[in-house]
Image (cartoon, rainbow, N blue to C red; front, side, top):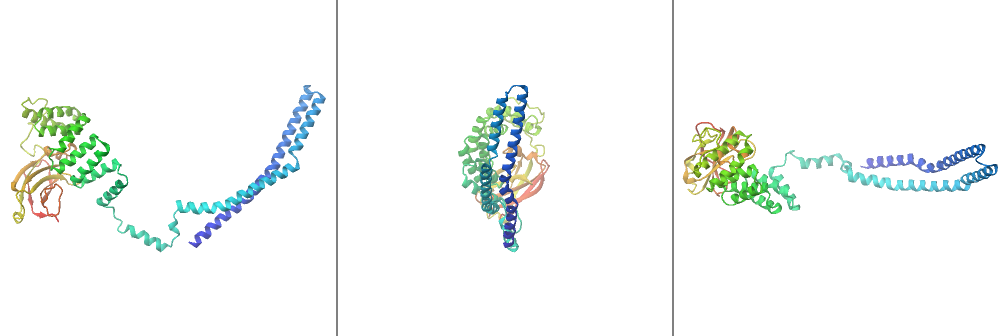
Length: 419
C-alpha cells in the first residue's frame, strides 16, 4: 500500500511541475502580444487617414489632428506602467491557480478513487483472496427460496411495488403454494384495484387452492374480470366455464360464442370450444349449431379426446394408515417447467380403487391444456392436511413419462410417503 501512495504522489508532482511554468508565464506573454496588436491597429488606421487625405476627404489640419490623437492613444496603450501592472496581475492569478491545484488535485484524486475506484486492491493479495473466497464458495446459483426472500425483503422496503407483488404471486404458483399465491394476488388487488389480469391471476390461484374448483371466490373474480375486459380471451373462456359449472348454460354459450372468432387461428382451442358449446347447447335443450367438426362433441374414449385414463389404488401396507375422508388428488403435469398441474381431479380415499379420465376439461387456463403436451407425468397423492400443496407425511405415487392420448390405462399405485 505504501508503494501505491508513493507512486501516486510522484505522478501528481510531475503533473504540477509540467503545468507550473505555463501558468506562471501565460499571462506575462499575453501583454506583449496585445501591444503588438495595438501597433498593427494604429498602423492600419494611419494608412486609412493617408488615403482619405489623398482623396481630399480630409484637410491637412484634420489629418494632423487625427494623427496626433492616434499617436496619443497608442502611447497610452503602450505605457510602461500599464504593462507592468498587467504583468503583475497575471502573475498573481497564475500563482493562485497553481496553489489551488497543489491543494485540490491530491484531495480530489484520493476522494474520487475511494468513491469510484477499487480501494480494496490496496490491501494485501492474501487478504483480498481470503475475502473473495468466502462469499463464493461453491459458486452456486441462489435457490428459488433465496430469490423469493430477496423479493420479499424488497417488498418490505417498498410495499407499493405492484410489479414485485405480481412476481411474488407467480413464484408461489410455480412452487404449487396456491394458498400463498392467492393471498399475494389479494394484496396486489388492494394496491391496483380491479385490474382484469390481477383478478384472473387471483381466481386461478384460489381455484387451484380449491383443487380446481371454480365455485365461490374464483367465480366472483372471473365474473368481475369479464365485465371489465369483455373481449379478453382468457376471461371469456373462464367465464364460460364458471357459468357452465353452475348450470347457466345459455350465459356460458354466449361467452364461448364471443370467444370463437378470437381463436379461429388455433385449431385445438377452436375445436375444444366447439365441443364445449355443443355440450352446453345439448344441456340447455338447444340445437347444436355452429360445430364445424362432424365428430361428436364429447368423446368417451380418452385417446380420441386427447386425455389419459388413470386407475389409482393404494398400496396394501398403507391401507390401515389413512382415513376414508382424507383428500385424494389425481393430476397430470408437464415433465419440465412449472409444476402446476395441467389437469387435476379431487376425490376421497374411500373412492379407492378408482378409474377416471384426465383431459382438457380439467384444465384451468387455456394456455396450459393437457392436449398441448406429448408426454406428461401422472400421479396421485393422499393429502393428510387436505391441502393441494404437498406436505411431509403425504402419500404419493407417480408414473412418467406418459404419452397424452395413448390407448390403455395408466396404473398409479400410491406407495411412497413424502419425507
